Image 1 (cartoon, rainbow, N blue to C red):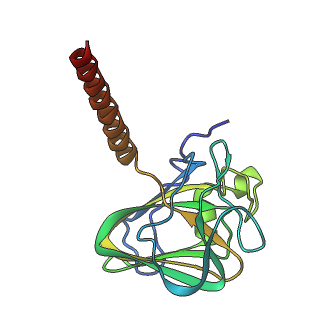
Image 2 (tube, rainbow, N blue to C red; image 1 turned 45 degrees about the vertical axis):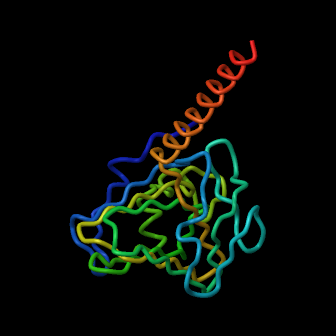
Length: 202
């Protein structure tokens, strides 16, 4: 059963670190049917891998329709990866798989703040549903976090004190719509070319 996006329980005014009261986090359980490698695809840091499938170094994120088969980023115990967001953004989406209480997602820049796994699990309301930290299949530990900031953030710092923090990017609906329109246009032009060619030979 597909769960609706968590609303009241997951809209969270961040009070930790250097947060502003207007910063919010929302969580959508099993919020996608596919994920992508985070962009940019190069990270700074150490103690992380890109992989597919599940093993002792990470579990493939659970998505709508089952575990993902795409490549994802796994932050290992004691490791961290920093992603440069250029001039900065006021919203950032991240697909997190089997969220653990020892995971941390932090942001640098004017809107700098940090979320530890306990805070994020509180947003998903996992404990209220009898779901523990690190569950590999639950919709309360696998899904899309949308972070919204009052001030811009210029980097994402992903870290984990123990194996692992599994994350992926979220394909934007607008991107897919543009791609589909592009494929449709290519198909229409090919059909038109075939019609003209057929008329010329008749």
